[in-house]
Image 1 (spheres, rainbow, N blue to C red):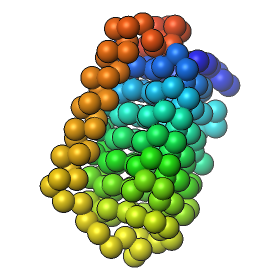
Image 2 (image 1 turned 30 degrees about the horizontal axis):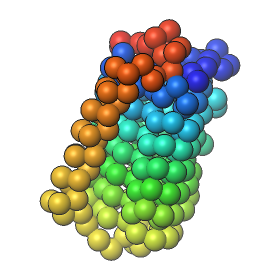
Image 3 (image 1 turned 45 degrees about the vertical axis):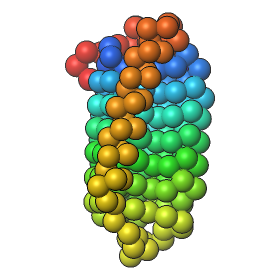
Length: 184
């Protein structure tokens, strides 16, 4: 379901896929080749949420924010992620069930492991591999390696292909066309 709120309407690139079972409302931009899967909620009722190119928000994610938020190109949020981040830079993977609290900034080419929790206002450096409970950047003790970088890339590319197949099968939100904005 794609809905306007408070005079703001989602802007969805024509190549993006938004599931008929997702809920996207308010000041939200969904970029080229991105995909929003069943059960996912993107609620831009107070602040703007911008998804870059080839972002995939997998089943049952919740995306909301305490200030304007940006998700860079090739970002993956796995199943059941709750994300209130301010910024998730390009080429990041947030694992299934992770919880990212308000005003967090995640540096490019980083991975947040499944089930991890990042507390408010933490800034994660680029190329980080985050596990467990993160209270401050000093809690991050691992760096991603080449295998991790390939996994981030492969996941984003795979979900782009999946989204296109679902679009071709007619499984996108029936209102998606009226919220399409080719300038996004």
